[in-house]
Image 1 (cartoon, rainbow, N blue to C red):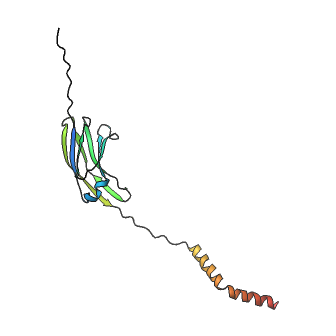
Image 2 (tube, rainbow, N blue to C red):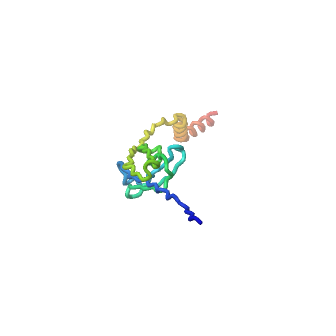
Image 3 (cartoon, rainbow, N blue to C red):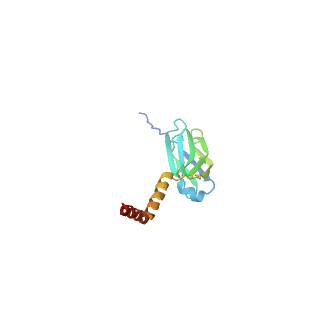
Length: 150
């Protein structure tokens, strides 16, 4: 009679942490999020979390392997140009890692509004109608004098 043992491997918890730095972060913070994608399949998003008020983030229990960490902005791209660093981490080699500062640059896009010339034809018709209305009493007099002469 032997003793049977069942051994469970305790999986090491993965922790990815860092903080956000950039100009105007106080006003941008509600619009920023940290996005973590797999290097093997960049279209697969592993995690998205809003940037907290402390600007420090921590993500636990990501799958081991290589990941891409990047900031994303929720502001419209037609009004703001947003660029952020792309950091690659390997949670296989180092399951608990602090990526340091994720930095970004943001720039407002100012669109020049081109002045388009006003259409000429409606302007000419409008002036003609006003001239016609103003000259109505004279036209009436001319008509009556022409009818009276015949």
